[in-house]
Length: 424
Length: 138
Image 1: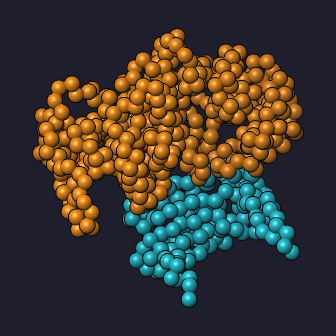
Image 2: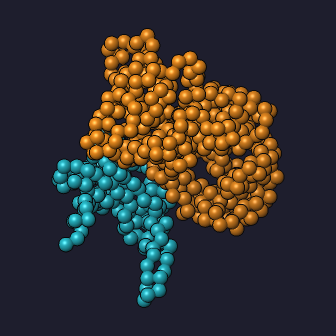
């Protein structure tokens, strides 16, 4: 077994093993440490001694043994601290029969890690460690913080779960839909964190978007009939498919209209399109499905000119009914401009500029610049690109916007090359 | 011991990095990418050595908001700095054995690739961080 195969096997088994251990012995916080140690033992022993016939059983046994040790030392520490030891050592036999499917355990863990009592940053970190099987050091690196900081964040999150007394089972059905929405939002945040870092020179953090896709796949496997889960997975695949075309070798942003579409990943597009196509007719269409449908139209078009803009406009109008997100409104304005002409789009932008949330947002200025350029108002467009660049804080985006302004400096021609940066 | 390494830049330096020429030329894509690659390697090495506590880059000085009072009247100013005034641009907090080791780390920033007009006058400061309230009270 190669190192990569071993790693993906362990990462796949991690939530199943943790689920099985917590189901039998409780103590989520300590069990989580025990499972990490069991995984570490496997990673060091299996390459030299060979993987056992039943890797999952091996991991559960080792983790349970480690859990016993950890609980014992915790108990004696507590006795020393003159506190009554509260926990039962794991003497119970594993629960027989009707043991639920592994995919259910993965789901239960996700629901725990994305508990609404936790802050979003704790939800992200704990999900990546307990469900994703990443080590604390790996999670810390993905978020560019010190390992000690991440250790404290994860420990605190586990303490909160412990004190909240959440039982290890799926939430009651009436609250499940709401909780699932939180889980999907956390997975989406992990994905976007990987897709565009909010500051600094580096634009892609590939590991996190890949991890988000892997975790969303697991949820899709557990809930194959849920349209929003399928929609989120499709959205991630259809967005991730453009990664190679989205920046130049030197790391400069390339807007959608100028991307080399032959660099798009056709396997991801095919899978995303198939997912969203089968999800859409099934029932209520939620925001992830709508966004995936929009991404699918872009991904299947040969060029910006050949894109079905009236359809995209209609989808944004549906999306606007489910969300008051100002970025949705801004993207809708772009679609209006592409479907009905730049003047109609600019009118929408004018209206949006009166809203406090967007009035100083660089993206509003970037869209205005683009639409002004479409109308042929080169000086106005140039001014708006510069205004957008001044308001952006992300350096690659600033570089992109300044490049657009400089392009209009050089020549008043070539306005075809204008940029649809926003829906990049 | 913890130390803070501080680097400085003016609004014009930021504009150059963001691809906009002022009294100094804009950075080319290659120059910008080279700096990004250097910083990533530099930070990764510090993480792996267990010496990095935290590092951040600050947005351009123009995004600063200053709060204060003048003759007892509170004020808020957007972008209080002159275009060429050098202000804090980024920092690293490192935890290492000695002031000399922190200085050595900061010294490696001199190797960061950048256009000549930037490297010609670049500098960084290293300052010890007070660890407890006891260090700031008498």
